[in-house]
Image (cartoon, rainbow, N blue to C red; front, side, top):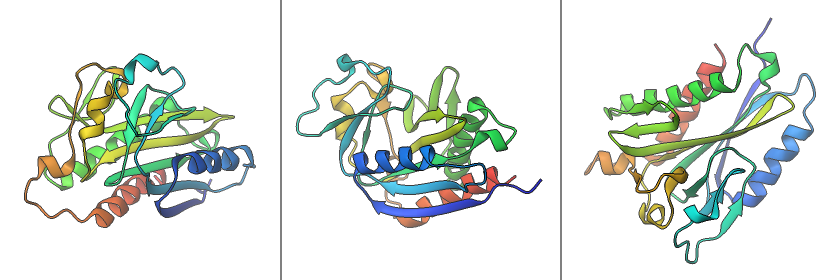
Length: 207
């Protein structure tokens, strides 16, 4: 059986709410042979609160807007310099469940970071990717009618200060890092990193 068609889209810097609406519309309109899609993008500064999110984890949001999202997980921050990869995948056509898709996302980030000589790890019971005890990538998914949306956020070269205004992912005192922080003095090419991240995830989905 041939692998489902996979469309890769680079959307640039796009509003969070309109992107969320577009993901929901795509998911709700899917039919049996609809292509899967990966969306690579960045968001203007925004805090997003997951379905089970608790307001107590928003410590001092200040002037950054807060949007309720229908993904799993608690609160996180999105901003320029962070790549977001959304995965719209019909898992009914693939031998995978939610845990398998989470594993694929995490392995994609690990492979990318390894290519940049950043030693990253996973933590049991704490989804995401870590460098030592600092989080460099977060993930949150929603599955509806067997189809996923939402995905991952990788901190590349961004202002990390807003993470101090929240308990990232609901963990008090959790420190957050970025590729730029791990590679001081290295001129990171943001566009190339994003394209490579999407290519790695796409190649894993096509297996």
